[in-house]
Amino acid sequence: RSKWKRVVRVLEEFEVAGDTPVRRLRQVVDAMAVEMHAGLASEGGSKLKMLLTYVDNLPNGSEKGTFYALDLGGTNFRVLRVHLGGQRYLSLEHDVERQPIPEHLMTGTSEDLFDFIASSLKDFVEKADDPDQLAARRKELGFTFSFPVKHASASSGVLIKWTKGFSIEDMVGQDAAELLQQAIDRIGLDVKVSVLINDTVGTLAVGHYQDPDTVAAVIIGTGTNACYLERTDAIIKCQGLLTTSGSMVINMEWGNFWTSHLPRTTYDIDLDADSPNPNEQGFEKMISGMYLGDIVRRVILRISQESDVLGPASTRLLMPFILRTPSMAAMHEDSSPDLTEVARILEDILEITDTPLKVRKLVVKICDIVTRRAARLAAAGIVGILKKIGRDGSSGIAGGRSRTDIKLRRTVAIEGSLYTSYTMFRDYLHEALVEILGEEIAPHVILKATEDGSGIGAALLAASYSS
Ligand code: ADP
Image 1: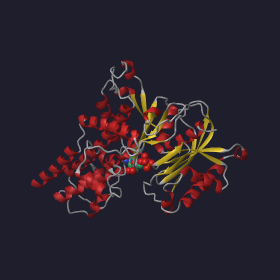
Image 2 (image 1 turned 30 degrees about the vertical axis):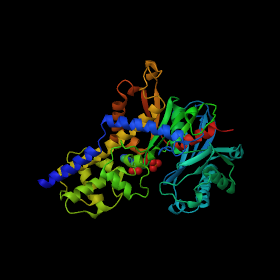
Image 3 (image 1 turned 45 degrees about the horizontal axis):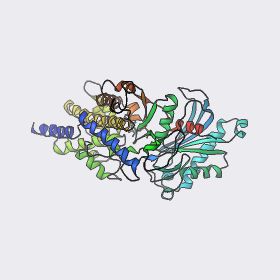
Image 4 (image 1 turned 180 degrees about the vertical axis):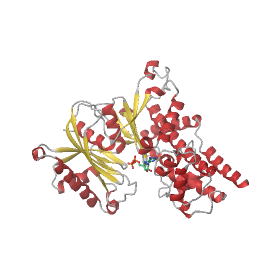
């Protein structure tokens, strides 16, 4: 009995340390808005890089023609073609081809990587096009390159650092668009790289194309990031910035956000210390698919060390990242009365057998705590963006806003498997939004799931930037 008490205590301590009452979420909202200001005020002014994208015009539906996109930013890369008829379409007709990046190319030379990409593009362009069209005018392409980039224009920018398992040393500090253009030229393809963006900007572009009230985009998948439309006069670190629209998309790199108000537990501290990038991507490590399963594993490991309720010690529990987030979601969403899916996953992945129902329930509870916290923090981040641009409804009449302003719709485009495929995550995120914003404002904040936004958005931007 006393052993079970110890288990309950571990769980309670975890729950308390990771708790996200609305009061704490509001502190996170405020901190996000403050850090956004700081990151816009000066280079290095915040853990939020607040990178300029030089994208100052978002697609509005009038775009016409056939445009291409390349989407590189994870283990797969995609080549796409989008046909636009000059009218807003809610479903965008497109062809797409996915390919894994051979692992040796992720750590080789930039020339090898880009030659590989360009040759895939060539196959794709030549396979589908009829020869007449092929010879016609030069094709325009949007390049989605989802790594931190310092831009000089919407069509050029240098890689600041690699993330997500890529490590091609010679490329840091080089212009990603130029390297792609050179590879395209080498292979003799008549394609112009017209825009260089990341996945969040693509998602914002698709969101805005479909719904002009879209002001921000968030991605919650393997990693997490967000971007939004900012007024140029608020971008203090870049004095004299002029755009025809008076605004510019800012890539927040919000995965690196940090504030002492985040409910950090010992498991988060250990995960960070064991990671290849300690003290970086702190927000991401609490929210995104790459990490949630591993937080759960760490709590289960602790329980197995404190007691024998999990049976004999399993060495699997010591293996980092062995429990992936989709498996964690499957346990969390197991609706069978005796939690057979939980039992199966514990057995198959962690080699923990013959768990009593009580222990399976405990595991579900751990998944619930981890996911609920992640989703609620993501919601706070979203409200933080709305607050920064004065659209969270909090500035009231004193802030120069009338009650009708409060009722203006604002849409946030959202993408990534945690939101689209993990129902409990999505439900918790929505619930927290309502708690933070209140019943009056929440209905006017629309979260819109987009699909393949990172790629399609690049093609849309290539269209709106085409000469
Ligand atoms: P990307 O790698 O481009 O971010 P996704 O948005 O599909 O792609 O995110 C993949 C991440 O989402 C993976 O890290 C995976 O752990 C997680 N994931 C995928 N499917 C699910 C699911 N059904 N439930 C929970 N997490 C999932």
